[in-house]
Image (cartoon, rainbow, N blue to C red):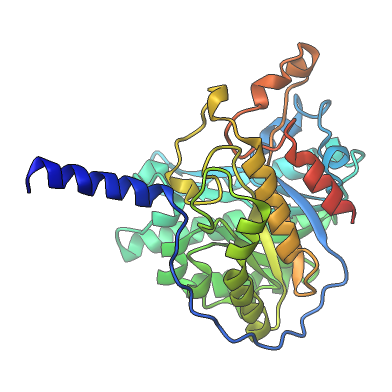
Length: 359
């Protein structure tokens, strides 16, 4: 290939990368869906839950800022290696749950979902969805420890009835495909021990169609980070249009299993192209030139317009609320949080969430 052909091809590829996707999506027949929820779960995820055991409590104002009545405690639980070489998850961290609830129960949120997110970085997997055990023995070892972890979190619902939902996994796409019987078994065990505790599983956007144990949980949990519109700042209408075929698929999924859809995480970053392939975007950027609050607000509004009034949608938990230290507030450092990541603090999207959670 000569240099002129190469240049032309490069320009063509560059142009195509910046244009909206024109992929034709085959229409799927819409099944009759008779699932009905009594009221919406208006929630938000908190990742750094450890801060709510002390230092982050005083400044915690998520319910008043967003009208959220539910909180998802979503700590990352890393896999560890014991001195004897065995692998385990730190189930003792579930002991933080009663303390967290006691610290913030007068802040306006009375309902909790526990969503421990297990990480396998120690084993060389940067994304938990990529994890696969190296042998049957390792699978059994990890499943036994994961079972202990989930049972420890489930047990907190006895002393703290505010804990009403437990998420038994988050975006574990290889795990769920290869070991579905584990999830069916642990779901049944928890239901037998704690019949008042509702269960869900948080499936990533490219995973949910392969889950074979939806009938074992109470809510079909979806993390809807779909690639929607390949534009820097798509409009609300652009994003709503991209959601149409997705909405049909999720409604059909709900109808097939006769269970409501719960958006266990939903959200958009405040950065260019946030409604496209978010996993390909640069990580956290502090450079203000990368900050784009409009695409975040547009994404949230399109999400609410598309899903929120559907009777088969149980509600959802936005991603994510940052626990801001009181010292930062006292020193007027709120502008430090106007960045390109998933957080919603101090950003215009707060008004979008607050309005839709109230109406």
